[in-house]
Amino acid sequence: MMGQPAAATPASRLDRIIGYLSPSWALQRTVKREMLSYATQYKGADQTTLRTDWISAARGSGQTPSGYELSLLRIRSRDANRNHPVAAGASDTMAHNIVGSGLKPQSRIPYKILGISESRGGDLQLQAEAAFAKWAPLASADNRLSFDELQFVALLKTVEDGEIIALPTWAQESWRPYGRCIELLESERLATPGNRARIDKSVQHGIKPGRRGEPQTYYIRKANSLTEYLTVPARDRAGRPKILHVFPTRRPGQMRGIPFFAPVLTYFQDLANYLEAEIVAARVAACLSVFISKDQQFGLTGRESSSDSTVQELTPGLIARLGMGESINVVDPKRPGDSFAPFVESILRLIGVALGLPYELLVKDFSKTNYSSARASLLEGRRVFKTWRNWLASKFCHPIWQLVIEEAYLRGEFDAPDFYKYYHEYTRAAWIGGGWGWVDPVKEVEASRKAIDYGLSTLAKEAAAQGDDWEENLDQLARERTAIDSRRVTIYHSAKGAEDSDDEPEEKPK
Image (cartoon, rainbow, N blue to C red; front, side, top):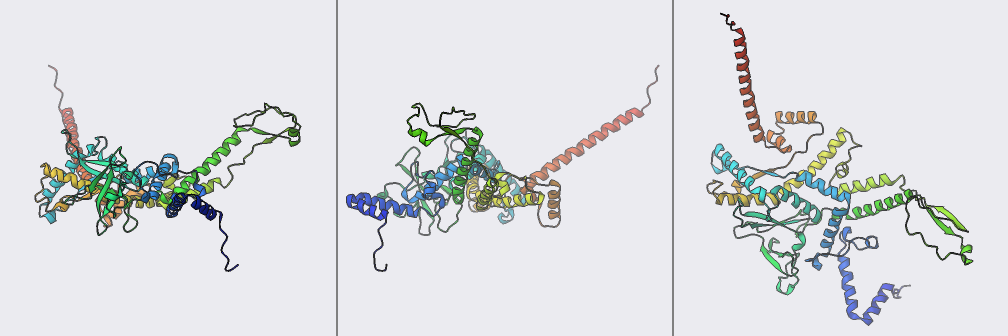
């Protein structure tokens, strides 16, 4: 009725009782409730009863309450990569198609802008690529990973955690060709120190922004420490990056990366639980066991044996002896049903839509496709992979290339006049990844040839699509043709000499 107060809910009555008995406890409950109410923007981080069996506590160190939801998303994304085959397969598909054996730099010095000859520009390009090739095998700070391997790990961590953190640092070993090296960090090491009294109030998620929102300072927790932090400026006075914090940006002002699997984490978990239930049902059906149920009236007579025990486990071929008043119920789960395969396929297609991966690429299943549909799926996947490849090259690979070329110049291995004046021109580069092959080589090679003939494409673009350098291809073709021509001449002269010797009259015996 109007005007009457609403009946108190059980939760509110419990809160009032707790508040009366322990005000501090009541305050903690209120704060926790507010925290959970703000931590549900992503379903992958919800705390409903359907997710009670999922990882729900932020484990590890360096994670602050302001990053609670992000920490939980990372934990669950890592769990998906470890335990869910579809998630693990999607991560590998992304890494192998975007990075593969590594993105290779091709120096692109604009010799016309620099006012030098084309041949001189070509020489500088060879010097830059040779210097980087000397540096690449020992790119990591721990002397373990090459630059190609660093790219692979960086992409995997970006998919799993939503970001990768790299520190350009220096190695002191005299045997290294270059001192510059790269140290990769786990994302949870970038965090706001716990002692906020000594930290600027503007610091969020371990980053102090400037007045335009640009990152100015990063707080990196030291390895094997919970309280000690390094303060790393975003750039030095010359503008060189002191830290590479790389993540795909989806919102203005975004400061931290979101795991790639965030929209589909619940689907991964639900699908895994569903498949596990079906597997358990199939195992139960495969056991061909029986349950023994006793007559209730017989049980009341007191004739039950004290040695009776409850069946705790089903095993194949289980046989139980029947007693007086006992009956048999056969276990028949009738699973999986006819809708099992279509349901799983529908879930996988939804996951593929959210991740931008066609179903065929997500599950590596081309059994239901023809040439046209397979090519359409591959082209759609390549469009996604190219976008990611260009992003990784510009955000991660190219800044490192610039630092290495600068060191090569300082060591006298890159003879570029007015290097700092034309710094950006001298450090231009294109990044070429591995090719994806052809569905039908004859049709696609013919299409590439016609595109070049009609001016719709170039030899450089077609070679880059296959992970090759068009100049290297032409040089190799020229060497091969020269070798073929020289061998043809040698073979011709050898054959001619043999014919001439056959035409000479035999010497008469004396």
